[in-house]
Amino acid sequence: DAKTTQPPSMDCAEGRAANLPCNHSTISGNEYVYWYRQIHSQGPQYIIHGLKNNETNEMASLIITEDRKSSTLILPHATLRDTAVYYCIVRVAFNNAGNMLTFGGGTRLMVKP
Amino acid sequence: EPEVTQTPSHQVTQMGQEVILRCVPISNHLYFYWYRQILGQKVEFLVSFYNNEISEKSEIFDDQFSVERPDGSNFTLKIRSTKLEDSAMYFCASSEGQGAKFFGPGTRLTVL
Image (cartoon, rainbow over all chains, first blue to last red; front, side, top):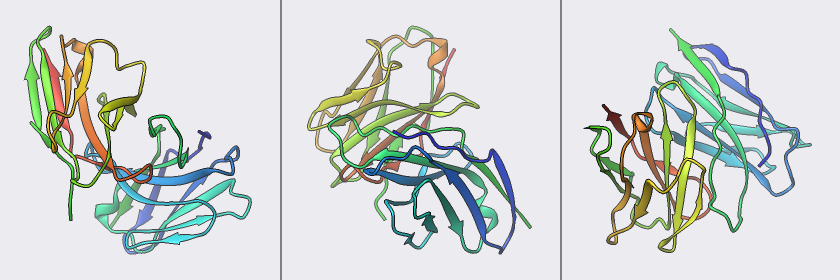
């Protein structure tokens, strides 16, 4: 699976959009971009994933650049409860192995009042 | 909304004792996983389980560890003889296919 690079920390004002970047310059054509978050030692929470098109769900939007070498997770109206570590993970969608996720250090997002 | 549940939430044990951590995955899911997170460190993959057998395991998952799906609903992680360094949060996860995984709240294991 391709390596990802994320800033270690970011701040965001409550009510504003939080834009979390991720670089994955070595991504392969069959690798998806997944985003998870972990709120203070709770279990990681799935947010969204995509291959090449932009995706949106009730939690967030995922913008993937045309060359797929980077992506941005957007939380449109951040709340204090969005304070968490956000992980960008790139992995092959289907393989014969165990389908594991490799977590890096992530971005610690602090939403401030 | 269906969710993964884990019991107990906190387990304290003496070094050398056996522990069994329990998980109930989401009911229609077919893939099951254990991860762990030592305090202050990254979330680490331990093992994945599909079709009643281990499909992948990490170097951490040595002979002291085993997994089992004893019935149609539970998925367990057994540590045969616990060591101090096994102290961590253990997260169970499940997925319907090879896509998004849904994690449980974790079991905090403390080995004394």
